[in-house]
Amino acid sequence: MIKNPMADEMRRFKGTDEKNPFEAMSERFDRAAQLLGLDPDLYAVMRVPSREIKVYIPVRMDSGHIEVFEGFRVQHNFARGPAKGGIRYAPDVTLDEVKALSAWMTWKCAVVNVPFGGGKGGIICNPHQMSIGELERLTRRYTAELIDFIGPDKDVPAPDMNTNEQTMAWIMDTYSMHARHTVTAVVTGKPVPIGGSLGRREATGRGLMFTVNEAIKRFNLTPEQTSVVVQGSGNVGGLGASLMHEYGYKITAISDINGGIYNKNGLDIPEVLSYLQMNKTLEGYKEADTVSNSEILELECDVLAPCATENQITSENAERLNCKILAEGANGPTTPKADQILHDKGVFVIPDILANAGGVTVSYFEWVQDRMGYFWSEDVVNQRLEEKMVASFNELSHFAQLHNVDSRTAAYMLAIDRVAYDTRMRGIYA
Image: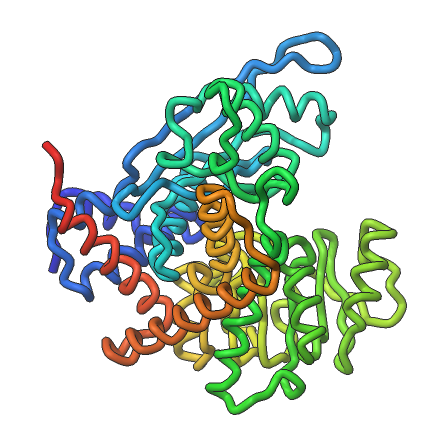
């Protein structure tokens, strides 16, 4: 048993808030570290972030008055390379959430074996109530505040909730103006003409499909025999559903922020997404029944893919899930208390730190292409993504079998083992 003050502190909070993302990440880290017999000194180093940055961002609004926003950037680990992770804009962003997401990025990068550590950023704001000009000024000032802490060899941001290619272009331009030359590799998820990678937009959904392709083999299913329910219709859920539909899967349900639609015979996903784009909602779609966002999780299916946000599957609803495979397209959709319930039900979980790692994998490809100034075709990007995701799935499965643990625990153990090796070999500079 590992004993140190940090573990004692963690146990003091364990179980107090099932939906606290940092507590959820820490609880899973603790379990995997103990099963690995991780050295207590390495445990103490790896369990906490390397750096937490809080900034206050004054922005002149369109009305002429100054509003001050609060922003964060957490850099969790640098043992394997620069920090890597998205920036989200939302009114409910918290430091605990950003800390958890930065740690998840460390484990995610390690699971798919790309040479990055974890980072994450966020700004407390409501982007839907801000003009393009206000968002640009907010983004540029946030970048300027972090200018000494980010860069191609330090920390490479990317899009996340409510940020996009345009946001990344503003960050790249602001950083480049300070550097006095164009630095495309400072961010990923950029528009293709200014250093973005082909295939990046679809990468998370495509990576999710590749892991599902491997998981259904455990149940002797083919795509044509497999029914899929997708919670979410954005960059992960919508694109993932579209790609799986094209591959032959039967998508029986999908949802947006307001609710979902269900047709047991399967949905015409291109038509559904076209309807959503035109109407900005799935409400009123006539070729399906209406379901709520909570009900959609309990529909009978072979694969359930929560692709929306954290804490969708908890101890309150896990028993009612009716799927064979849970493919976690979102970050942290399942709480630790729900894990045990799903394990007892025999649900096979493709954990988030593998299932949605397609995005960071192609972000790594983008960073590599920017660094060498030579860009690959989309076919090459997709082929290399598939190789990476399939290899990672098989390595995780082998690790789970070797240690006789569930897939989520195996994912954490594999990731921690890799980061621990690099930390041990590099040593602690003091």
